[in-house]
Image 1: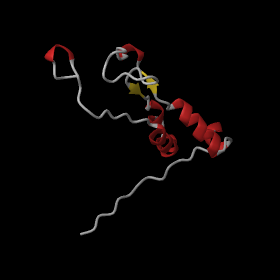
Image 2 (image 1 turned 30 degrees about the vertical axis):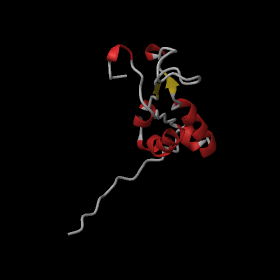
Image 3 (image 1 turned 180 degrees about the vertical axis):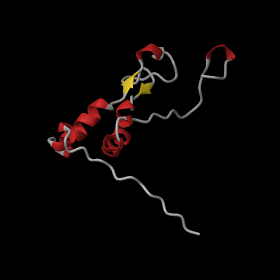
Image 4 (image 1 turned 135 degrees about the horizontal axis):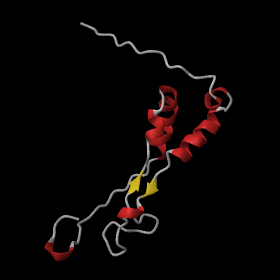
Length: 103
């Protein structure tokens, strides 16, 4: 029993200057700047913490609200958003203070 999914066609919004005038390369640059990750200054790590390192002094956040504006923006922007994400992994054991095993 095969089920077929039907998708509504995307309106490419050629009346919009973003899609009707600007080439894709420039749109990708706009999306890269608009969806860029930033460090959360309100939750920055102490300099003597396990997670702190130069250039990574706090948790990274990214605002993806732009991708929720329309299907055309999501179709182009989500690739840029995922490509630009920076992932951080810590290996080893955490030396925590006050016998607190949680970081």
